[in-house]
Image (cartoon, rainbow, N blue to C red; front, side):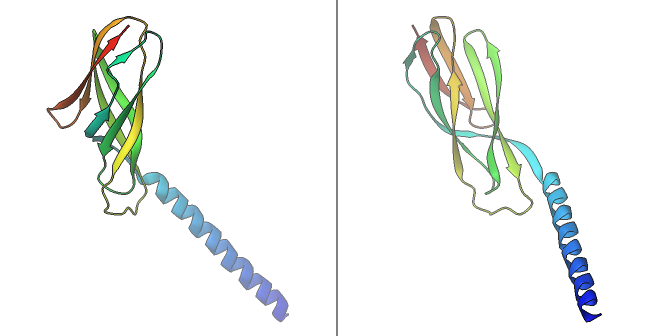
Length: 134
């Protein structure tokens, strides 16, 4: 009889833990935010070849330890591209450490010419990269 009570008690405890974990997992889904991040520096070559990918290192700041790269938001006007970084913040409990993150931006074009890539570094300023594609 005592063994059955012990088994029942263990079953209740384990069920409670599983339910608690499920609720924590649901709460994590709610702790995702997206914010614009400003570029702090860009490392790029000056030239490239038509049809070949140019990898450009883009560094950007995030507000806390949960911040990561989300995506690039691009607008194109002729041979000028304006690029913004959208950071993704995942987690309900984040460190106050505000790191600089790094990501590669891949530029490719099928046309020779001079291109300007403008990376948003503040609400009104940009870091510009000029590329000559042969």
